[in-house]
Each structure stands twice: as structure tokens, then as C-alpha cells.
Amino acid sequence: MEKTNKIHIVAYSVLGIAIILLAVMWYRCAAQKDKLDVAVNNSYDKAFFELSDYVSDIDVLLTKAQLASTPAQLASISNEIFMQAAEAKSCFGELPQEGVNLEKTAKFLSQVGDYTYVLSQNMINGQNISQEEYTTLGKLNDYAGELSKSLDDMEARIYKGEISFNTAHGIDLITRAIAAEDIFGDLENVEKSFEGYPSLIYDGPFSEHIENVESVMLKNAPEVSQKHALKKAKEFLGDEGKGLEFQSEMTNTAIECYVFSKDTDDGQLSVSVTKKGGYVLYFIKSRDVREMNYDKDAATAIAHNYLTEHGFTDMVSSYYEITDNTATINFAYSKNGVKMYSDLIKVRVALDIGEVTGIECKGYLMNHKDRGEQKPVLSAEAARAAVSTHLNVNTPTLAVIPKDSLREVLCYEFHGTHKDKNFIIYINAENGREEDILLLIESETGILTV
Image (cartoon, rainbow, N blue to C red):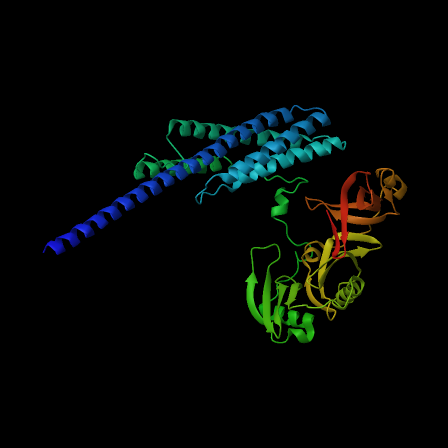
């Protein structure tokens, strides 16, 4: 009996110690969780308060922009708006959004700096701001003011403890849930303030027309059936097209298409065909390429012949890259000696047996069209005068280049060297404006531009 009691005493002692240890561990975990919750909450608050400050600055700067009368002044103001908008967008991205749709607020922060920057560049290049553009600036100013006021109101409620992004320590679950619900409700109200926000069409990367861009070449092409698309894929691939089967459809993209595929002896082959027009958008044959028996020039010739055989005529090669014994070569459409860099096709060539293992035609299918005769206003000599005297350049060629806004510009393309580095300078063939400067990165594995 005495032995049994001792066993019970030991068991209870061990159990008691275990309970104490568990309690201590629970307390420490709870304390750590509270510390983490507080840290997270503080980071959310910091991002929100900074967002509010940046938007307030943007509101003031937009008012100043409407009063700027010189290119230099507008350029200075637009540069500040651009930087403040970028910082505001960064802070906005740090906030929890819990499924709240804040798309319009994000769009405003993307567009406001971009739009004012484009206006300042136009003014520097001698273009006056139109009345319509001043009106748009005024509307952006109004939206910035509304957004700033909404954020200020939310900031005041956060300071009072009425709402919080992550309330945790010392508050019961019901109060915490109400506070969280309130703050996301306030964010939804901020989004509602952008109802009626104008569609901005301008020469910048966040312009509305870029989001809604559609293929120029396929716009009016008839839609083809899945069966007809499979036939087109087999015709394009020849013998390799045997055994292709439908895999999926790609929708809600600029170019919708059918995707077909099959397993091969050493990998897989996949090909997509556009729903409109029945053109091959891409094909890729995946396999190991263990050797390099062909050089870049041979691969370029193989790729060029392949394009010609498949109906892509008047294509000229530009840049290339070699990885894993496979060359990827870029080709641009050329007409009367003018390269159209928007009409781009990429061809992959396996350098072991010189086999074309892939093609990507999106640039070509999105942009190819009859542009008419491209006639420069400026002479080559006048364009050369706009190039820095620090660059030793060769005789230029003509090229149509795409801007960030997808607008195309006819330019003189000058290749030159400076401090043993190769550059390309693009001079607008209409007004002599310097449109772009590219540094050529050349190595044994390719030529790329930055």
C-alpha cells in the first residue's frame, strides 16, 4: 500500500511539473504572439500613415502643376509627384486588404505620377499643354484631395483606437473583429470615392489603352473551331504534328488560343493556335540538348529558312542568346530597309542537330500591319547632328521602334562605340528628338540590350 502511494505521489509530481512547464510554454508563446501582433500592427500603421502623407503631398503638387508655366518648373513638380506616387504605391502594397477590391485606388497611384511626367516631357519638347490635359490634371487633383481626406479621417480613427489593422493585445475577440471589419469597410469607402474616375489615354506605360490592347493583325480575323485549329497546327508542324491532342484553351488574354500537345520520345511538344485567324502563336519542343555542333551564324540561317518556309518573309535577325546549347534568335519584320521592331518573332534552335525546337510569334501577331511607306522628315545628316559627339557612329538605318505606350516612332538607328562599349542611339526621324539609348551587352552566349 505504501509503495502504491509513493508511485501515486511520483506520478502526481511529474504531472504537476508537466502542467507547470506547459503553462510556462503557453505563457511564453502567448507573449511572443502578442509581441508579433504588436509588431505587425505597428508596421501596418507605419505604412498607412506614410501613405497618407504621400497622398497629401501629391494633392498639393497637383495644384502646383496646374500653375506651372515653364517646362523646367513642370518637370521639377512632375518628378516630385512621380517619386511620391511610387512611395505611396509601395506603402499601399504593404497594407492587408483581406479580399477588398482596391483596384481603382492602385490605378490612380500608378497613373498620377506617370501622367504628369509625360506632360512635363511634352512641354520640354516644345508642346503646350492642351485645355483637355489641364482639365484632366484638375480631375486628378480632385481625386487626390478626396483620397487625402479619406485617409486623414481613417488616420484620426486609428489614433483614437476606433479601428485597427491587427488589434490583438488586451482586446477581446468581439471588439477585435469589429475593429478589423470597420477598417476594411473604410478602405472600401475609399475605393468608392474613385467612381467616375476618368480613363486616361496618354503616351505612358500605365495608359488605359495598354490595358485594353488587342491584336492589330487578328482584330477582324474570323474565329476558327478547335478542329480547324488542330488542322492548322498539324500543317505547321508537318510530320511532327501527328498525334497532337487538345489540351486546353487560353482565354482572358490579348490573344486567345487553343493549346495542343503530345509526348515525344525525349520530351513533350506543345503548340498553341489563335482562335481568331488560326495562326500559330507558339510551339515548343522540350528535350535535352547535350552538344553544340552549330554556331550562332548557322543557327540564324536555319531559323531564317524556317520562318520563310512558314510564310514569315522579310524577317531580319537582331539579338540572340545561347543557353543550354540552344540559341534563341530574335527576328523583326523589315520593309524597304526599315526594321519594324514591334513585329517580333523568336525562334529557338537546338545546336546539337540544328533543329528548330520553338517559335514565339506574339509580337508579330499583336502588331503586324501595313504601315505604308515610312518616309523620314529629317535627313540622316541632320539626325547625326543630334547624336552626342562622344559617340563614334556608323551610317544609320531606319527603324520603327515601340515606346512604353505602344506608340510607334520612326527613327534613325545609329550604332556606335564609347569607351570600348557598343551603343545604339535612336533619333526621331521627324523631329530629331533622342528617343532611346541602348547599351549592347555582348558575350559568347549572346547579344542583349539594356
